[in-house]
Length: 381
Image (tube, rainbow, N blue to C red; front, side, top):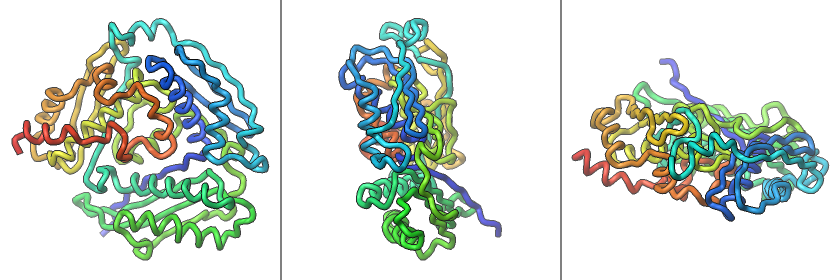
């Protein structure tokens, strides 16, 4: 029988695109910390010893954008001048202006409309304790473990990627891990044989064990398969905010809407409604109403209520998808203002989302399952 495989990838917080995401979200947090009503749409580009910060920011906060960028770059671990991108020597330019008055009019507190049109998706399933797809959860956990290791040895550098292929049966049940790929930037002093041994023992093995698997059960493992990876980070590849949207969500297992997250304040439904869709999907699964759920929301600019809501249980629901849709309409305020209030989003909580993941992280407000008992009771199960 042909294998049923699904693959997800992830990148570390030192990947060039994630460096850009982290700077944008750090600036957002700095604005919200002083002015919770800040309107922020911050875009960052990084390349060899250069950082460009652009976007629309309307805030009462007094923020040193360049210093925040340097602090973020240093925190990620780019502190070695020989790597071609480091916190002390990077050139930083800022091109910031205020938000369009036309957009602001449709999203002010009196109107409470969405900041743009668009569709957003949220998903959940029972493959992992955090109710995330296993390929996405494993690839993310490997990246987060790589990041931890970067800060415990001077032989590794922050840039890295992972990829995990999971085998499923015809009913969608996990059979095992087929392939693990890890690539990490390193010092020239780290011999490849030693690096591969280090990654197997300190990254791959403990992460797999945490999810109930053994490294000995994985038939294919590739560690830095092309060999040396000493030119990396923004010196090896230009990074831009918002280019890792599949990494930021479900690794391709569920759909993704048209917008990125990082650098956007919660009036932007690209971000806040995607968080709300995850919250609704996770609570439906936690309530036992299905083993796999995808929720879609869609909005029109300046209009508060979503123009559509769709629940898809992929045939796993114990009640109909239409019934679950009605339950969500009954229990959830899906206006931008309602989402912001429910999830308490006007706070500086976004910096770590770019670094360690938006979903499947326990302390995120959209990861709570407080709605599950209510949904279960209303569903009568």
